[in-house]
Length: 281
Length: 212
Image (cartoon, rainbow over all chains, first blue to last red; front, side):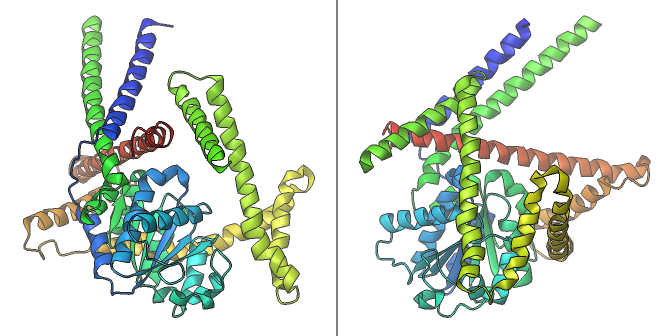
């Protein structure tokens, strides 16, 4: 193994250890950094804020445990906000493990902020449906045919908050928390573009740039929460110090460290190229 | 017992977390073990989940409770069985029929909706009057949107050699593309750090109880 290769492996390990430490320390000793609210998050917040009291809303849990760090804080904040406004929350999942994510989110928000909320009256979990776009289109024709019962096998007709729901268009707004496909794209295609239901999305940071063009003049998406940063912004708008707010300290410090590494890496690459040019000449 | 099982689960999760992290030092048997357990468990979980949450409620239960009323379900059921024939080399060609049906149906359903959502709506959303707003920031944003869209699309126009004046929009388009790649990279870094935060949060909160 050449000296250069050995050095490069050592440098990589140093970077890993440094990132590990700079992420860990702010989790133990929070810095209390305040996020700046961006228009994309403000739009999503306003959509929830301006919906009528007792609005019927869908939160679609289109993710699994691998992305809970980014998407679960969004779920907590959105459910909390919806309940503060008196909305009735319908949880569905286009991903099988989304059902468990929804249950955990409801339990968490009930335990922390809304102990008075009752299943069937204030929220319901309809469970998982396969099919993505096709399923959502069918919901626009006949909601009850797609979801004849909730995840506990209770017929929809016996769930008080769903007595007036016949079609997807009876829903006031939809938020899809999405880690991939099927997910937010399907909701934009069907709920927003086809049935004109107000739609917002929450995605992992990695997929957020792909959804930015949908927040446009045509309002294919009303607002977009992209990654942990957006979740912390939403928490700040609710004046809640939640998981995302605490995690953002670590995120910010790690970004600073990565910026420093990028600068050092570029200087080293420039020096190497310069010395190679000297040798050649 | 429940308390013990919870603790046992946490310790197993800690073991697998460190096993996966150990790859950062170098490839080793702990990493390989964790990786293979993950792959095996995921496959098993999906198989069981699909049987109990899709096949049984949507097919078997309906056929058992009301066979005559749900006889049409035999069609997708049989197509599903045909799809499995891929595992027999001599008759694997039969699996092409259900596959063709799936591809054809999916394309038929998706093309119209994709065209509307990803092309027509996207095009109309860039047809804006850039001077409609009084705000300078919005005006600049609108102009950037129009210039970026036109130059970005022009960069992918390959039917004529781009040289001289006709190469300028293409070069502007490259700048817009580079900036968008940079933004995507920034978001990717954020996503990857978020994953690390998630694991460290688990280790510090659930395992070591160092944070609340």
